Amino acid sequence: MTFSTDRQFPRTRPRRLRRTAFLRSMVRESVLEPGDLILPFFVQEGTGQRTPVPSMPGVERLSIDLAVELARQAAAEGISAMAVFPVTPGEVKSLDAAEAWNPDGLAQRTMRAIKDAVPEIGLMSDAALDPFTTHGQDGIIDDAGYVLNDETTQVLIQQSLSHAAAGVDIIGPSDMMDGRIAAIRDALESAGHIHTCIMSYAAKYASAYYGPFRDAVGSAGNLGKADKKTYQMDPANSDEALHEAALDLAEGADFLMVKPGLPYLDVIHRLKSELKAPVTAYHVSGEYAMLEAAAANGWIDRDRVMLETLMSFKRAGADAILSYHALDAARLLNG
Image (tube, rainbow, N blue to C red; front, side):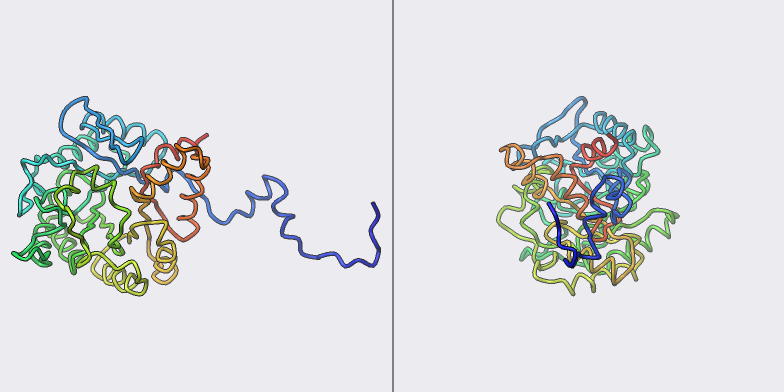
């Protein structure tokens, strides 16, 4: 084949830098590593107990001893931290969520066990009341069912102090009450927990993607047909997320959380680019379940889509990612 000598060839060929693996690696803009990942897990009462979560294939509720073993596996793969979510027995749920700050509660016993056995892995807790209330809302309610902001914050303070005393490294307030970051920060400082970080769920949306999670922690039945739209954010709003996040930073948050993840990549990008603070994405239960369901039907390549999804969070600007895929992803990344 011959070419005309007067043909105008493109001087710039972006494909040059895609031709070989070493060139693609050299110009790669985002990198996904096991240390970027945080593994959420569900803990239940008992010993040697594991209960599958039907709506989250591959995810199980674990007794404390098995959660400790999971922590050892996660640390061995280089995962940075784990996030504890307790499955609270129905008999200890109440209107005032008193079990939330029980120093011998399931969550607190789990925290102590993991930090004693695997001190090198970071541990994050969930500061929220929905696993502990008989109505499934994230706070204390009035007679009309409205979640009371300041009354809820006082309970969150007690819960957070109990978590810090149990040894967690990061408190994750996921309740979306106004002013709770400042209140928790002040309480932690006053109690001497000056090194305990706060990862604020600054932009937590009133999303339909949380269904499998509520099944896993046992709050779906308590919530029933009620919703959380009076305190979680409207999915239509992006500017509001910036306002919420800026307030939380001013109140003493160390990290910002965007939840859910994939439907809100634009919010992750805006928070990172405009506020220049550490941002975390939560690849939530509904996102996990959809990926697993599609893979089970043979419609997608599970491992490749999983890693591509997690990479999308890094590309959008996330510094860390909570994902139920964290352990499998870390194993793939480690080869």
